[in-house]
Picture 1 (cartoon, one colour):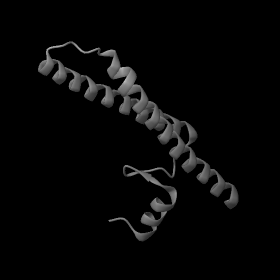
Picture 2 (picture 1 turned 45 degrees about the vertical axis):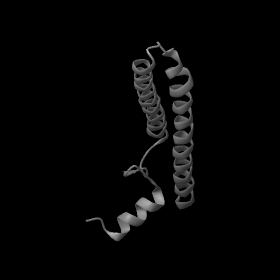
Picture 3 (picture 1 turned 120 degrees about the vertical axis):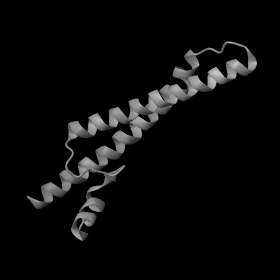
Length: 103
């Protein structure tokens, strides 16, 4: 069981999907932000292609599959990447400010 101090530290340092962000450096934050954006891109593209396959089986017309990448996957991936990099960047800068005040 986590102690009261661990819970307070996790709230102060930030938590993303249960991952404590208190010890992440700038490279780890960058890597996590880019990976999150890429995962969102691939998941959205996969779901859009599945939706197009269902549409094709219902209408018997071949859809333009490049729309799954251009109109669904890229905007969602870029948005998620920008949001996650922004969030992780704020968390990292807070840590740097807090460390400089302590020193």
